[in-house]
Image (tube, rainbow over all chains, first blue to last red; front, side, top):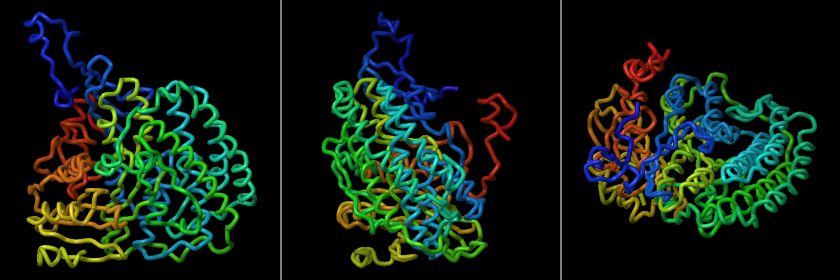
Length: 387
Length: 158
């Protein structure tokens, strides 16, 4: 089943025998890091070209989780497609739903009412914390630090409990609707979110205490997988990877959506663009998310939660591209409507797909063990890469 | 800026706006030049997305869309061009390195080839797959049964 076209180097054994060399003396070794691998965060196949333990180049083979979501989008109505948006990046489902709902709202030219916007921001920022916690646990686990995994998942449980009380689902939440929210927040929502923030704030310090000055962590992540800002921009890499390389750019500030203008928060950036900086940026982003949620909960207004949208949605013919700052990068939706109840084309611009292109550049010259660290630090979710 | 481009290329560029977003429909022959100008002179250094649309009723069936963003101007723009079935486009990889996988996906899903692409092959579907799924004449339940039978050993994927 292996297609020879997907390997990088073809070593002819007969040729080697003729030159009285053993196979192990060949300069390059092509190794497959197969789709089933505990550290690739999903079904990702990486073909490594190695010289001993040093990586000369690699090629990613993706598509194992391709479900044809964009094709499905053309055969579902706008409201029916909403749950599909969650299932692409299943870790950060809430923010994906936000992106899709906002794009369709742009097509319909409606705006969600203020209360809905505030609740959306609270849930989306909670999702950012949850996504970064999962990233932290699995990334540390890949590198060998097993302890943070248990604690990050425990903290993530608290967020998932809030989601379950709000909309009934923990992971693929389908929390938002086109035009606002479906469910009113439950009694005690603000109190629980505030309790969570008070519970969580010292936890970030705990994680930093475990890892930030830990000598093994620093040895394994400093100067590993460095990428410069120019390369990031040329490759289209966004999100914490871009910010760790020194570019102070966040869609929540540059092209604000969903009333992020009302909140006061910083954009953490790094200097060297290596794995350690990406770790610091994501930890700082969690702190900023806590800040945003606090401000949102304090300012939560009363009011309706759903704008006036027609029951049968037929947006006028046209096309819109809208993107949000998902925890992984810029997540964009390009929806083309032809005036009927079903979209003509739903294109999802996946941050993990575009960020994964940078893997080759980041891993050249690194050791094999660092490939695992870099895959973890890019924070990819294969559901989004393959759709 | 659009006025400047229109001045240089005249009828080849048609600027439009919808829902507050600007986009341009550009003639196929002007595409490599316009993209180059947008990157070098107008500072659209970030290629956000490359995608395509299929309109089987039209004579020029495919519409290829580039979504570009400029950090310096904090502006997003879309460039569209229309090409016929079987026509190819010059690759944007020399302009933006990130166009690599995006163009491969357009080829995989629509069958539009990009000349000069370093690695023009399928990305999401298996290499031997026949057919381009996002075209409108590809059924929603359709699969390449031959590939499924040979490679998976089952009668059909349904």
